[in-house]
Length: 223
Image (cartoon, rainbow, N blue to C red; front, side, top):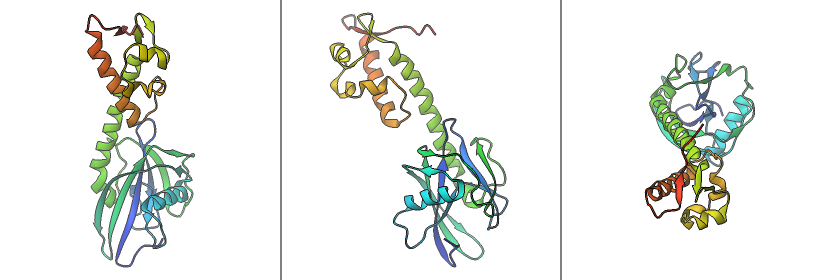
């Protein structure tokens, strides 16, 4: 959609890769030319949802197909000849190789670290950068904690023998509310759901390993 004459609503999409870096582009041929931003665009009257706009704009600008999205926040901007409200979403759920699809709108792409963003930042994005940095830092911490929990889970034993399946988990006394997802927990899923379940299981293990009558313990990590 072309730029609105008075007040417009737009979207911006934060794409995070496995290294928790943000995909950015250098703007070209529009207001803020030369500044760095994230993919996004204006909402059209015919658009069914803001998420639909996010997926369309990322595909049109970078050739990437986006799946699920989560709302991050919003900003308001006052430009000389119009005003805008931008809704920001973020996701890890995407596929495709990033490329410049519209060379008349972007001159460069880069995966950047939030602590060292390219300059200058596009004005609306600058207002949101602190919130984006908080998101990335939270995701990084969650990833590190989940990796640590996975190591502990891999070393989980019952009576000196590794717990390999659901029946052994039940026999070891792991609560049914947790073992429902036992099979999935033995592999990193990279989701908050699996992290929450892993944390609940780990807390249960820690409580039981100090109990002389318990049959669950964590073997020391020899790696």
